[in-house]
Structures are given as C-alpha cells and as structure tokens.
Amino acid sequence: MTNIEEKIINTIQKYKLIEERDKIVVGVSGGPDSMCLLDILYKISRKLNSQNSPSRLAQLAIIVAHVNHMIRTEAKDDEIYVKNYCEKNNIDFYTKSIDIQKFANNNKIGTEEAGRLARYNFFKEVLEKTGSNKIAIAHNKNDKAETIIMNLLRGSGISGLKGIEPKRDKYIRPLIDCERYEIEEYCNCNNLNPRIDKTNFENLYTRNKIRNIVIPYIKQEFNPNIINTLDRLSNLVYEEDRYIENQVKKLYKNILITKENNKEIILDLKLFNGQEKVIKSRLVIYTITELLGNAQGIEKIHIEDIIKLCSNNIGNKFLTPNKKIKVLVKNHKIYFINQA
Image (tube, rainbow, N blue to C red; front, side, top):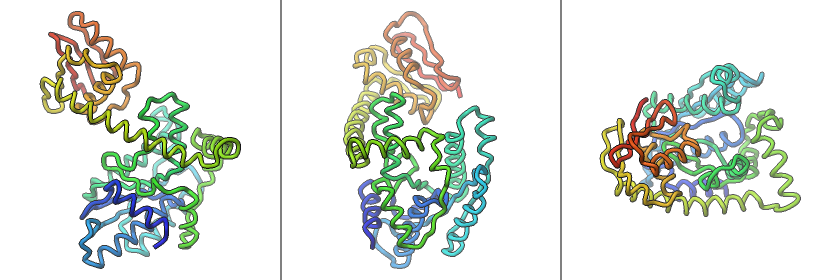
C-alpha cells in the first residue's frame, strides 16, 4: 500500500466518510484528482468485497458519474477515457452532456459556477436513480487552500476560512488531506494516464489565477509551505466553528416555540434579542436552514436586516430576503415562513 493510499484510508476513518454498505457515486472528470480517487476507491471496494471483511467498509459499492461540459474539443475523449476505465473494471458508468456555456447564459451566471451546478445536479440525479447514499468528490488539500484565499478575497466570515470540509451532507472528500503532487505521483506510478484539462493553465477564472499566480508567488516570496499553513488554519477554524454551531443548536432549542413541518418556525423574540450579534446571525442562518434545507441566497445584508427588524419590534413588520422565505415579527415572536 502506498503512502497516499494509507493517507486516504486514514482520512476516511478519521472523518467517518464511509460506513458499512455504502453505495457511493464518484464524480469523475478523467483528470488526475478524480482518477486517483476512483482508482483507490475501486481498490478498496474490490479488496473488501472479496474478503468477507468484518471492517465497517465492507460491501462498498461505487458508481461513476461523468459530465461532458461540451466546452473543450477534447471533452468527448475525456468521456471515452472514463468509460473505458469503468468497463475494464466492471463499474457502473453514467454520463451526461450539458452545454455549459448555454446553461450559464440562460441562468445569468459565470461559466465556472454553471459547470459546478451542472455537475452537482447530475451527481444528485445519479444518486437518486441508483439508490446511492453518498457522493465522493475529488477535492484535495490544494483545492482547500485555493478556496480559503478566494473566500478571503471575497470578504467571507469565519466559516469561509474552513475552506472545503471533508464531509458535508451527502458529499465526502477522501482526498482532502492529500496534496496535488502526491496525487500526480500516484497516477504516474499506477499508469493511469489521466486526461489533462488545458483550461486549468489559462488564467481566465479566479481559481486559476490563485492556483497559477498567487500561490506560486506566496511560495516563492513568503512561505514555501503555504498549502499546509492554510490547512492548519482551516482545521483550527473548523474546530472553533463546530463549537459555536453546537452552542447555536442548544440556543435554538431554548428559543424555539414551535416548528410546523417545513412550513413555519416560530422563535421567542425576547430570548433572541438577548443574544450577542454574532450568535443572532448564526441563529438566523440555522433557523432558515432548518426550514428550507439550506440558506442559499441569504447574504450578510439580509441577516443584518432581520436582526434590525427583531430589535425594533414595532408592530407587525416583515421582510422577504428572497421569494422563498418571509420573516415576520408579531406578538413578541419571530415567524420564519416558508413561501417556496
């Protein structure tokens, strides 16, 4: 077993990414990261499924999902490459061609964001179609560092300094403790010959500029170990953020008056107003997430407006941060109403 294989298995065990009888959709582009992830998960599943192992990873099933973005002329070759690997190793393979540029234009978003949304939507489709319960993504330690820098540039809060988490909802990231050079070495040693996306070397997108310009400059001029430095920062923030979230959960239970399925949540206004502003902000996000399943589209300005609304407590006032939710203050209570 190679060092990177041991590291990935340790990551899986440390964060409990894979449990007994998991059925996992693996997002595979054909590049080094996703091919390393697929190859190692395939080896793990083959070994465990053939040994009647008592390990909690026993009977692991993997399914591959690939999206053809229809941007590069080589995209069809990428699809064929991944398909051939799956056929050779008897792995179920699902693919979908999506005109990402058209998708971006129709939704008035950037190409990079459009590609991400299209991939994740397809991964969810495959998960539901195959009765799978998790989705494995090939993010690594370098990706985490790049994300932290991107979040800093955008002026994100503390949560943004976590970068990419090992596990979130149904998504798992077994490569998150591996650096990119380790992944490339694994691909070379195992003759995977992954596909190389040449657009990764074009500095058109923010992430590419950070990867190709900012991080190399920091390594040369300031800190050659910047990837691991940011990883340590991420781990510290993760622990502190988890502690705050646990406190917020406890407070939420204390100030919760009623919750009517996914239609409405009512909180005690006085108890809410008695909290520190940072906790109020977290409570707003937590409550909206409890109601809608996520807090997408809720920005800092919306949170501040909701806090201000609650502190004024004048008559029957309300806000609609977006078309999905209404926040109403009435009779010393805060009503979070699902309008979706």
